[in-house]
Structure formats: structure tokens, C-alpha cells
Length: 168
Image (cartoon, rainbow, N blue to C red; front, top):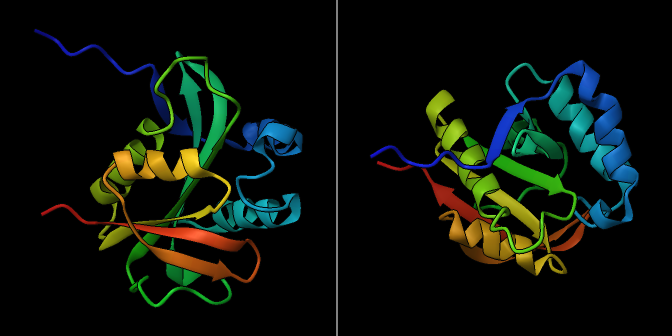
């Protein structure tokens, strides 16, 4: 018996997706993902300029609904939690409100982490999630990430630090 394909997929982001991503960042429902819009654009630009970062468009039944990325933490500027060892990849995502009643969120960090582990030598994946984004924290937990502590990020403010070690 064949498994039913997930309606959630991650496809590579292209240069043509830049307009779509900027439009999502202006949407009030997505503005809490990365703090303010300027910090979100800076993080996305950093990933776009990196040759190794994973940049993905989140689709629901092939319709674009968000953006996800993963980047090695050593490429990020500024202070980092001590738990983020070299070789850890930071994952982030932001989506428009998912279709009602659909379990969308947990699939995104699960798919992103699976791709990081399959395509890199990452020792772990991390997620920094703003405190007010409890649904996103739960999605990371459902995807196998574990809560470590609250990190006071210089740009975002207080955020949950979640880690998922590389599977053996």
C-alpha cells in the first residue's frame, strides 16, 4: 500500500520568488515570525547570498503559502546561544495562515530538518522562535526538536531555543 503524499512540500526558492517573499513579509499575519520586517529581510538576504543555505517555498497542495530557510549558524552575525555548536544549522519559517483545520505547521520544520540532515554534515538543527509564537514552538516539538531554554536574542528579544540532534 502506497503512502498518501503530504499536501505540504518545500520547493527551492528562485529569484522570481523574491517578490512573493517580500509581499508575505508585509502581511500582518506573518510579521511576528522574525521580529520586525528589517531583521526578516536581513536574515533572508543572508541566506540568499550564501552558497550553502537552503531556501525553500512552502506549498500546500502546490500553492505557495510561505518561506522556509536553513543556514549554518557560523554564517549568522552577532551573538549565538552556547548550545549552538559549530555545524548546527538554524531553521526558520514563516507562512500565511494555513487552511483551517489542517495540520500544517509540524510538517515544515520536519521537512526542513530532514533535508538539512540529508544534504549536509550538520550535527544538529536549531530553531529560535519568538515567545509569542507558541503554535510554532509546538510545531518544532512535534517535528522532534526539544526545548532548551529561553534565549534573549539581541534582535528578536526573548525566544524559545529548540534543538534537534542529527539522527544516528
